[in-house]
Length: 439
Image (tube, helix red, strand yellow):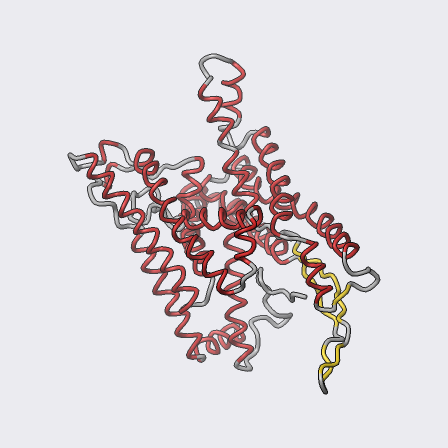
């Protein structure tokens, strides 16, 4: 306890770190306050907080702003969608590949294209948002066209403002601005979920069951931390080079290949496809008993068919996303160009094949573990846990929270170590998702 108090004192004794933490807290407060500002022309008393399916997932990420018809109703999600599109384009389109290799100037161009694409995605999604989430009786304006146009502009401006807040957190705060906004939206629902599960549902007479649920949640969180941090380090030796009177190279470094290098993207991709069976079955539900069965089965997230298909999709998307984001041939070429080699492996194609084999072997257990984490909320609900609290037992919410918290702790610890303070842990340094040596 004394070390924890001393660590807090050390954190706030560093002026730059203190200012960045306060800036981050201030920006997050602005983001949370904006999520309660309802769109003009909407009666908030006529809205419902119930959201299911993909709407429920978005509502969790946005801290309830989605179901409140807030000016931040779309939040940062259109920007995330635009970023995913540009990331896939840099893999498939040579023009964007060339732009990505241009360094800082290329990244600035890609960021600018992402912002422009975000505006178009906002305008498209705002139409569906207005029609799907705001009931007609909640609209108090007589002119429907005026309401639609004004709401589209306000929702787009709200997303751009959220994007600006995320960039300010990255520049003036402690980093990871976009991820921080998503995480704070998820965490904002955590206290209410615990209260509903432990106090209102279980009550004091079932305190032991509540304690067991919290212990199980702690174990799941620790297992998720292990999944996020697990890496397979490939040793790389660099040949000595004499330049003038100085000798460069000769040291051993490592290529850190993460067990879960795809992050939460496979779950997001799989989740988006899991709504298609029920949607398509609903079209032919009146004409076929099979369609009715499919619609009923895949609308129930607790059915074994739903979870089996969900897990299989996550495993497939994990391999797919890892393949498009990590290029063993490029890694081998960069190593060869810089005079590096894997001990016992010839540079060039054999090195690329070796890296590809290692990546395949570690991705397989990583994909299975990721699938287990994704379906854990369904098993928690089967065990009697409330749906709002069960979502914290796994899935996208837990992976995002663990990853962002680890990155934030790593940023804070780097400031402490630069000022010659002790780290935050006695057993070693805090490792985030980006804390890795790159050959």
